[in-house]
Image (cartoon, rainbow, N blue to C red; front, side):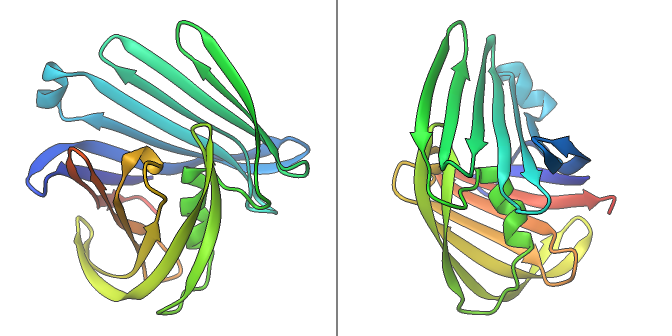
Length: 217
């Protein structure tokens, strides 16, 4: 499990997050990694406004394509579950939002579509070189879009496990997608583990920064 400190506006420690591969299991006629990301605010902030987020994905271990992805959120007394089920062969996805009601829709998706969490793990499996540029189709929260990715150089990142040499990766997301992020950056360790040691997102309410605190790997 990877554990992160989450800061807001480069100063306030807003919460913590975890990222882990929970299991490898049979799924949809194949085998899949069950990957989970969770986030909560600090105890102090939770007294002001209670939040909880969980994203998970079933990632086929052979194709490295998602079979099913979900995002569950609790904001105060409100909860919401968003589920995307992929039919990669037919290039379709079924999307469902569950609140007090259920809303469903079908989507046409490009070949090799990822969800947001699966994309992070797929990036870890790609051989990186400075200056590389490539695109990745994403199907997330009922929308499809293409992310343009640029690989920068290796930088030193200060983390809870020490200074780590890491590749800086910059995904460019179409406006209004990916939760409204206008700028995203990701740092993957320059070693065989390819740990996500830092993630940064610029949102309308400020900059959020996730920095690796600990790793049991």
